Every structure is written in structure tokens, then in C-alpha cells.
Image (cartoon, rainbow, N blue to C red; front, side):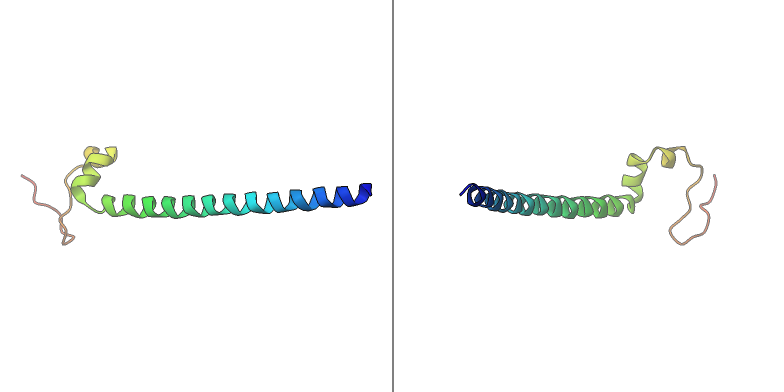
Length: 76
């Protein structure tokens, strides 16, 4: 009799744990997707010279920028 109650309790715990595990897995999957999208957005923003100049401190400290065609910009 006691063993049956114990088995029912264990089965109930396993069901609750599986439900909890599925919820946590869904949340983690959504977080990974959102972080990946944020990473892609940040990388795309850094491709723009004006945005990169505003976001990256080192860009502001650099010397003469290169032109898009790869040749050095003319110094004044």
C-alpha cells in the first residue's frame, strides 16, 4: 500500500518536472533566438560608418579614414 503511494508520488513529480523542463527549454530557446537577432542587428549597425563612429570609441581616436574603394583619403 505504501509502495503504491510512493510510486504515484514519484510519477506525479516526474510529470511536473517534465512540464517545468519543457517550459524552461522554450524560454531558453526564445532567449537564444533573441540574442542571435540582437547580435546580427549590432553587427549590421557597425557596418554603417556613421553609426560605428558614434558607438565605437576607437573609431573617434583613429587618424585619416580610408575611402570605400580601398585607397587612402586625401590629406588636406
